Length: 330
Image 1 (tube, rainbow, N blue to C red):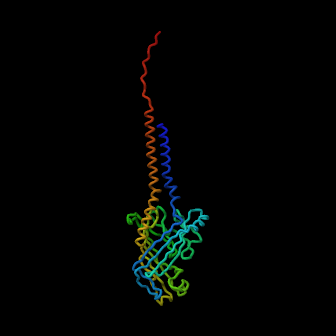
Image 2: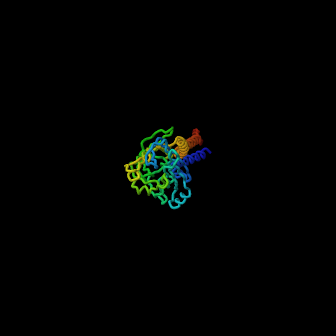
Image 3: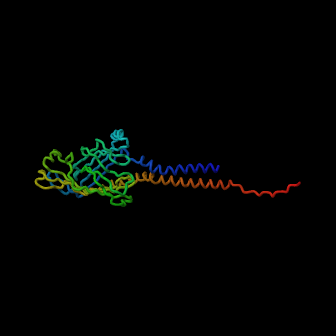
């Protein structure tokens, strides 16, 4: 009976020891993915910013500019793309809506971002776009991959429609969460006008006829939780200018927008809470379960060997004394 128990324990030890790397290296890459129906929004603010008054075409100081960013998972579009892509795909329909201190719209730019649900790599389709213009993204946007590494990544800039390196600058503590800090600088770049302009009757085409162009630069900063790949905080030092043309009345350039854009405090707290809960799930698959199964396997193996050794020890019989040979009588 003891020998049978030790064999069962040995089988369980082998099972759990084999399950440990399978959970980490096989199950996790397949189970960890962005849900297709995910919805999230974010409010950012630039206080004491500079904003163009299109009525006078003069830049003026304003107490606050608000940017509302929304990302909505398009399940129907993702299922359609998956049929031809042969992998799990997420489609995010995004909108960046900028409004002045009076609540009036400054600009709104829609996006469609298509990416692999597991790796966050872009999936190229005809529906990829920024503000109605087709784009072919390279690199990341909005989210880093699960188990983010301490290295530079390529990051897509929707304003300039270009991909540029975003550099790993070190590990920091952000409100009790260990994060990787990344920074990207986009130099002054000529960019298109938004399709939706803040003044009735003005279109990108009518502005283009004046010879005035729009230029943009930014320093983009992200604090990323490495297990989930989710940014817990972000900032941009953002500047836009209009340059040349008759629209400026002979001036060389005028500031269209300049401000230090930061996440609003309530969204910082809610984002950190969400990241913490998702972080626990990733730790479960990458650390807690694999190490737990391995430890359990070692313990079961030790118990099996102990029972086997104990059983053999008790099963050995003590040597018996043999009687001395008796002489045979004639």
